Length: 550
Image 1 (cartoon, rainbow, N blue to C red):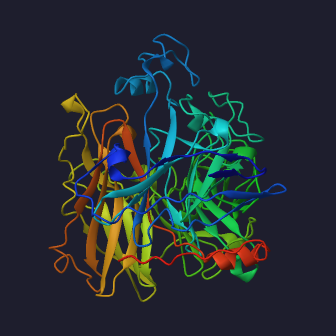
Image 2 (image 1 turned 180 degrees about the vertical axis):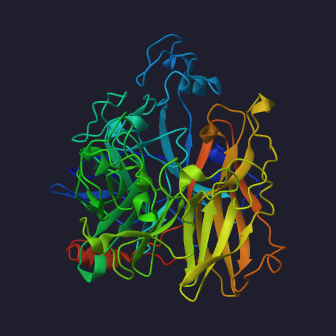
Image 3 (image 1 turned 90 degrees about the vertical axis):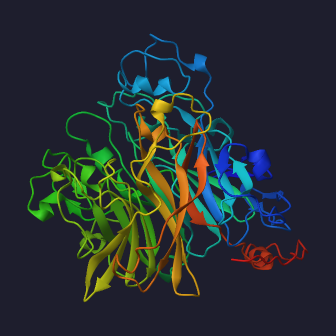
C-alpha cells in the first residue's frame, strides 16, 4: 500500500513474488530454494485522516537481505514525434524508443522521461526474492527520472525499521520533470516551465509505503533522504535530504539557493523544507551566495550561487550527518560534516550548522580537476575510524581513485589507505541482455551508492551500485551492476588488500537501471506499534517469529 502524506489516500502497488516473475534483472547467481517468503500485504486501518498500517504475519523483506532500487523504461515510441517542441527547448530529433531517445538531450539539455520505481529484496548472493513497484504520481505515488543517475539512493532509518529514497510526484512517461520547478520556488529563467513536487518515499519491512511531497530542489533533483526518529532525544522525527537545485541562467534567485543542499522536513510535514548551513555571501547577489559551504572558504573566487552545495550521498553515523559532493564544476568534490559532531542539525543558518570538509579529505576546487580527481558518491562508516567511499570515477580505466576508497582516521586526520578496484574491470565493456547495438555496450567506471555491514570475523561486506561509461548519449541510462566485496577491517595497505576482489551479483538488462542499495529494514514489534498508536485494545494478534541467516 502507499500512503500519501497530507491526506488519507491509499493507492495500489504492483507486487512481484519471485525472481522468476521479476524478469527485469539478470542475476549472475541461482536462486536459493526456500528463501522466497510468503507475501502477506497488510491491510490499512483508516481512522480519520491518518492511515495506520496493520502489520503482516510475515515481512515482505527478509532481515539480512539487501534492498535495491531500480527503474525500467516503459515509454512507447509514439510518446515523442520527431520535430515536436520539447519542454526544455528545441525540437525532438528522435522518437521515444531506446536507445536513440536520449539523442533529444542535444536540442533539450533538460531532457528526461519519468519511469516507475521498483524496490527489490535481493539476497547477498544476488537472487531477487520479492519486489514492489510504486504507482505513478497521478495515483498518489512517485516516480523517478530514468536517466538521472544520482537518484533513488536508499538509506535505512535511525531505528532500522524503514528505508527512504527520493523521486517526483508526477505521472510515468512525463518529459523533463527532473528539471521542472517546484511550487513556491519558480525560477523565471528555467527553460522548463512546468511545476512538479519532489517526493520522499518511505518503505518498511512489511512493504508499507508512505510518500511525502516536498517543494525542495526546484529545477533539479533530490538524491537521498534519511529518516531519523527522536532527533537529539527531542521526540521529533525528521527527514534529512540532499540534492541540487537550479536550472536557470544568470544569478540563481534566493528562493532557489535556499532550496538546495541539505534540507530538513518533519515526518508528516511538508511541503516546504528548511535549508541547513551557515550563510555565505549576500542573498540575491552575484557573489556566489550559498547556504552551507562556499569555495571562498578555500580562498578561491566565488562560484555560481547555490552550486557549491550540490550534494549527492549522505549517511548518519554517531548522530552526525555526513554528505558528499562529486559532480558539477563548482565547489569541492569531497566528504563533508554537517553541523556539530554528535548532534544532528535541526534547521537554520547559524554557525552551529556550518558544513565543513572532513580533515584529510580532498580540498581541491572541482573546476581545477583534470584527470585522476575525486568523484565521491556513497559513503559508509564501518566504525569511528574507518570510512568507505564509493567514487564514481572520471570514466577512464586509469582513474586510480575510482571504485571503493578506504579511509582511516589517524591522529584526528583522515588518510586514504587504498582504493579497491579488482573485479570491477574498469573500462572493459560487458554485454547487456536486450541491447542489440553492441557499440553501446557499457563499461564500469566506478561506484555510486554503497551499503555495508561489519561481520563477526573482522571483515566487512560492502555492496555497491556501479557507474558506467559508454558511447551512449546518456551514460545514466546504461544497464549497470550490483557488486559486492569483502574487506579486512584491520587492513590499511594495498599490499594487505591485494587479493580482495569484487563479484557481480546482478547486471541490469537494456532499459533498466540500478540506483540504490541498503540493508533490508527490520520489522518493528507489532505489539509495540499497536500500543504506541493507542490501538492495542482494538486488535489482538500474534506475529509469528521468523529467523534467517545473515
